[in-house]
Length: 141
Image (spheres, helix red, strand yellow):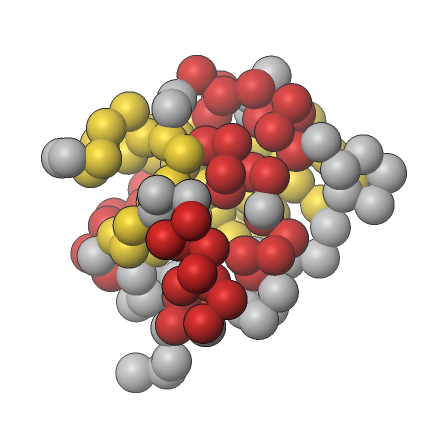
């Protein structure tokens, strides 16, 4: 198995400072299974069909305020995943959305973030999600 994007020492420090936790790879697999039920175009979801609102971090770095206006914003926590085979990251919504660029800088490619209402037990709301392209663009409903 490839080295997890969450094993970086800087990410581990962030997890401790932001009261984050690691989610089991099975949760990531469940999230990807949900995403795979949606329409795709190439390597990304088809947001023309899904109806998402974009945010460019190059133009407006307030991803927290943007997220609060999306469906994900109704949740206290968020789950971020990189692939179906690796663990995910769970932390307060503001922490993940405010650090999204930092959290993925060593893991190129798309990441998906969904809302969560509880950490124990972890209760992800897969349908309330955003896509981050790994560069500078977020999109979500």
